[in-house]
Length: 162
Image (cartoon, rainbow, N blue to C red; front, side, top):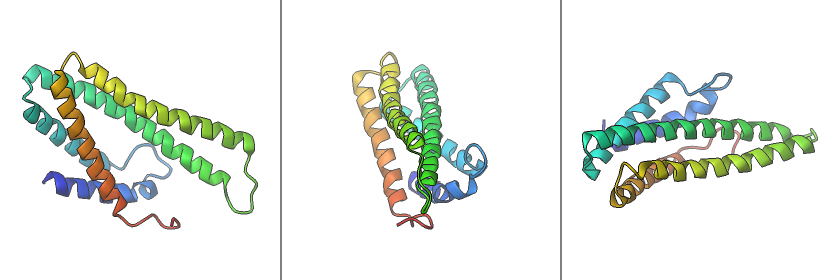
């Protein structure tokens, strides 16, 4: 499976994940498996393009996977907070100001934590990769994330959303 078709499949699966994942923790098994394939393919390609030694590739993989798990936890929390905030704004029901305030504060902190996770990842990669390799890795990762966003933006919005 090519990276493009894998990204398209992931995007399609992510479109149904909120509905399929309601009431349980984590993504459906097929989404998790596809995410794993994409990560593995990306890390293999990064190691090749960056010209990493076996030891560098192993260390980079450990750092990147740990950072990815941390970000997935933050993404799950963000999604849960957004859903809770949506529930506060039901038509005809007054929102609880204290609850909304706490959620807004936590959403803001979550976004800061998410951004900080990227900085932390790059700092952890300093002893593993040269500055040029880190820059190349950052550009590769940014391109991958942009492709995923582009694919997600081109999908149909969830029911009930404009």
